[in-house]
Image 1 (cartoon, each protein chain N blue to C red):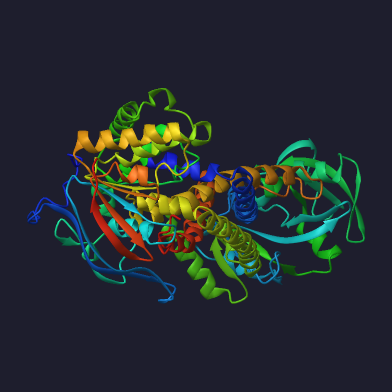
Image 2: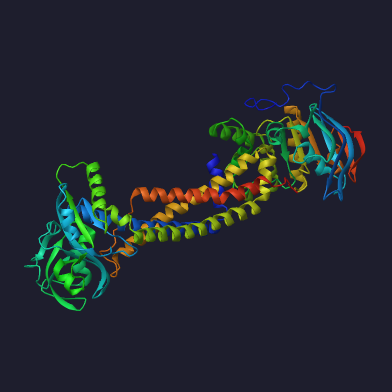
Amino acid sequence: MTFFTIIYRGLQRRPVRTGLTLVGIAIGIAALVALVGISRGFEQSWASGMKARGTDIVVSNMGSVLAPKPFRATVRDDVASMPQVAATCAIFVDLTGVEESSMMVVSAREWGGFSWQNLKLVAGRMPKDATEPAVVLGQNAAEVLKKNVGDPLQLESTELTVVGIVDGGALVENGSLILSLPLYQRLSGNEGKINIIDVRAAPGMSPNEVKQLCTLINHRIPEARAMLAGEHVGNSEAYRFIRAMSWGTSLLAVIVGVLGVMNTMLMTVFERKQEICILMAIGWKRARIIRMILWESALLGMLGGIGGVAIGAAGVKVLETLPAIHGLLEPDLSPRLMVMAVAIAVIVGVISGLYPAWRSSRLTLSLS
Amino acid sequence: MNDPMIPSLTENVKATPADLAFEAKDLRKDFDDGRVRALRGVDFFIGQGEFVAVMGPSGCGKTTLLHMLGALDRPTSGSLLYCGKSLADLPDPAVYRAREIGFVFQSFHLLPTFTAVENVQLPMFETARSASERFKHAVSLLKFVGLEHRLDHFPAMLSGGERQRVAIARSLANDPSILLADEPTGNLDSENAHLILDLLIHLKRERQMTLVLVTHDPSIARLASRTIQMIDGLIVANTPESS
């Protein structure tokens, strides 16, 4: 028998209460895994989308909404004229409801720009020119909208035709509705406006030089900010808000878990008052009693954390299959997030056990 | 007598003139802000290797006295020395309890979620013994009390006499020099009571232990070499008895 046998037996003493406490922690940690995983996944999806398009720098004005704010289309010419810039592509991105889907990425791209090049046709064809009332759909978008080549598609108040289905090489690209920039500017009433410029740096530039190019662009363009591809979403006010909400909600769930563990451990200490007194009577030091209580609560936290990670990951997988968001979610369920979630649960357990452990050390020895 | 793996508290203590284990002077203990006076100034000594019975009616302070000897409680005033050293000045009473004292209680006080062999191992966690050494020693102690066939039984699966034998084995876990027994036969039938008393006397003789036994039964007290009679927190008689 080791010290951990004693700790394990302590938790086994009241299996129902231990089980319910574990469920409480697990729900808190599951919420954390799901919310943080989704928000991180959102950021990473955009980063991989940019990578798929071969974009090094994104010039945009990320405000307090998820889609960036529009600015003058001529800004693109200012950026394109810089010697360190190899290519640019003006884009208007919107997040809007499209027919059955409550939210979809609409990506209107400069006709002939490099951001069309990564799209591989799976079915149909690309639009013939910048003015043809046609769209191509990413594979997931086509699945969500239940559209095939030749089907009509209502965007704003205009009926367009789905002429092709493409594989964009990233979840964001495959979940997008893609059309030419002039067409969307006209039908959305945003003539002369764009909200993103994809920039390819000149070949051979080091990551440091690309960062310096961002600074140069920022000096020249007051309307928007240049950031390394992928970072622009993470730095946006809207994303920061989502991230704060995710952590805030998770924190609330975790606090509920803390209170649950603390309650359980306090009950344990009160119920096991005589047992603790016996252990002290047979020579156990108060420090060992404190360690026993802290280890029990830490073990509760760890087991709850492992359960929570499993529930959270399973929950996110179920969410991914829901029609409303299918193809839009690419949650980050990396081992790093899972280890972090279990570590948080263990810390929660230890913190929850501090007061009960202190109470146990203050017990008056009484064996009557 | 002490566990060879842990240094004795008494190693550097000079033996008192009469090789006293305990010496109490004007020992007092109050509870509830002085409203309850459990010990009202008692003086006594207990020699090393002696078997002393503490007798008296319920509430006379017997158990309080035993708890003082085991450093489970501190006196309100007066002095209580163990081998010439004040128990009130112990830096950590838990070390004293772990190394020098074995407790046997009327209600056995075994932990219900641990088997017999695990209960006996519990006191050994404060020693340097490894897990396998703890197990082997616990098995040998349970053999000593005749329970080698009950190693993996939980307390609820044992009879009262068996539970008390497990408790005695547990009290010997760290090879203490003092055994403090609080009504050890109080919850047992006469047959088991005799078995437990025989075991305690055998232990005392074989291991040269100091045995302090609290009882209200005169027939048990007669087995001791000396009887301390208490009433209302005072020692009213301290008489040698034939063993």
